[in-house]
Each structure stands twice: as structure tokens, then as C-alpha cells.
Image (cartoon, rainbow, N blue to C red; front, side, top):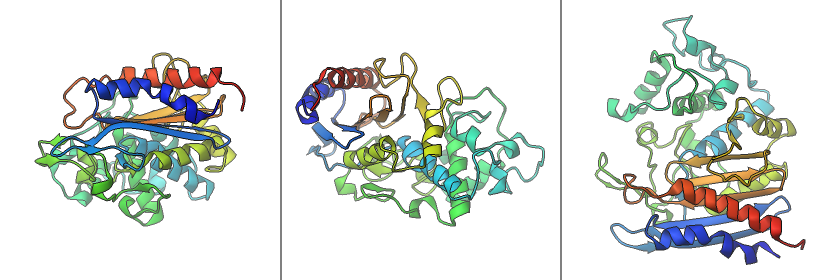
Amino acid sequence: MPLKTLIEQAFAPAAASVRDGNIPGAVLGIVTADGERAVQWAGHAQIEPEREPISRETWFDLASLTKVIFTTTRILQLVEAGKISLDDPLVKVIPDLRQYDMNAAERRLTFRQCLAHQTHLPAVEPLYTYGQDPETLRAFILQRVWQPSPPVYSDINFKMLGIAIERITGQKLIDQPLPEQFSFRPDPKLCAATERCTWRGRVIRGEVHDENAYALGGASGHAGLFGTIDGVLDFAHSLLDGSGLSPESIKAIRTRESEKRTVGWEGFYPGWHGGDACSPDTIGHTGFTGTGLWLDFERGLAWSLLTNRVHPSRHKDSGILSLRRATGEQVIALIDRRQPL
């Protein structure tokens, strides 16, 4: 049975969530290693100030999917090009990192540790409350005395990786070349709206939702990328068929660096956002705005659920965790049951 026949059933949890008013809109895409693809959508790209329908061509603020689609991939490409190695310290390309203390712990952090969230850096810091000059905020990130703590999932790790990419390439992140259907500067009219932001005083549409990425100039290593469902599926397919990265890089994103983390990605564990039906050889990532991408290498299957669940406010229970899990389990159950083409 072809994917186009199955996707309506796979989309049922998202359709119910839209119908019940938990999320404004959603797009689900599925792709296999041999390139078969299907997409389904429902709901609204915007409900405030005017309602606008969602479509297959809607651009989404991918939020932390930036970490895997852009930052992790770009770091691995720089490794493949011989510019750095994963176990190099960041100071190889950012010599001024904590430059007033040559013994600072941050000067020993490696690319691998930051990608796998195995550092002492905190989860998040409200940098945007300290000002909006991007260069000053970059300097703050590099010179801040970050207090030691056990490893956590950290935006700061990826902010530093973003700065490293800028140093190596000589280009700001917002000016970096991107594949088709990805952008750091999308056309707002094509985008799903996110939050009615009290800080910026408007509904956010076509500019990054994450306050820190906005204050850093619109793009950072942790957030800022926009894309369409077909752009995300193109990216996923390139990892499934091995065309997007070298075999060594693909191995790195599939190999555990800790119980839950690989290089850049999250690996399957019971209770995670991708659902419990995934094979152990599944990686995934989510974004705060309501986005997510999962790749089950054992099945040769990837799926992405893109929503604007923070529109018009993050301060509500959208049920996104249960929706993601139900969607992943539905996708896999249908794929496992279908007859060979």
C-alpha cells in the first residue's frame, strides 16, 4: 500500500488536535530511504490577527531543529573538509573563549561534547534581557563565567558552535548558504505565525520566535532556521540514503555519546517524543515552536510533524508530547502493516 494511502490515517492524531483547538495547524510528512514520500496538512498558518489556511508550502520556524538540520550538519561537513575534528577544543577556532582565564573549563570544551550536550553549560540564559547588540551578546557568551553543573540539554552549547561556524567560514550564520526550502530570512507572508510576543509587542511571523536568536541578529546555532515540510523531508532522505553526509558522519549521528544523546541528535529511549514503537536505531529532535523530525534507520523511514503550537501563546497546554508520540506510533504501525509495493 503506498504512503499516500496511509498518511491520512497517520495524520489522524494531528487532525484531531487541530479540530479540538489544541494547535492551530499541522503538516505531517513521511519519506522512505527509496524516496517514497507523502504529506498531509490541516488547520491554519495564522489565527491572529487574521485567519490564514496552512498548506504544504507553508514555512515553519523550525526552532531547535536548527541544531540538527543546520548546526550539526555544518560542523560535520567542516570535519569532513578537514577544517576541524570532533575532538578538537573550541579554542582551536575561538582562541578568545574565556580569554581572561587560560585555565577556564570552557577552554577545554570540544566540538563533540557541545554537540552531544556533555558539558557543564546551562540549559538556557535570557541573553536578550541584557541588550540587543549581537556582537556584544556574542562576547558575553564567550566571556561569561558559566557555573559548573551536571550535563543538560543546552542552548549555550549550540550558541558556541554557531560562533565557531562563523569563525571558520568567515560568514555570519544568517548569511550562510542553505539548501532549497530553508532560510534564515523567509518571506513572512509564506510563514506560519508563532507567538504574540509581549517583548516585541506583536504576533511573530517570519522572524525567529526564540528571543535569544532574535537578539543575536536573527540566527544562532540553536535556533533561527525556517523551512517547509518538503525541505525537511529532503534533508531526512539525504541522511537515510547516505547522500547528505559521509559514512563516518552518519555513524556519528547514530552512535550514542550518552544514554540519550548522539552527536547532535537524541537517540531513542522509552517515553521520548518519537513514540515507543521506534527501533533502537532511531534518532530525532524537536523544536519549541512545535516541530519535530525522526529517522528510523532500521526501517529506512523518516517522518516530520511541523506545527505552530505556540500560536498565539506558549502559555497553554497544547498536548504536543502526546501528539508527537501518537503520531510516531501511528506512522510506524501503518508502515509495519503495509504490504510490499
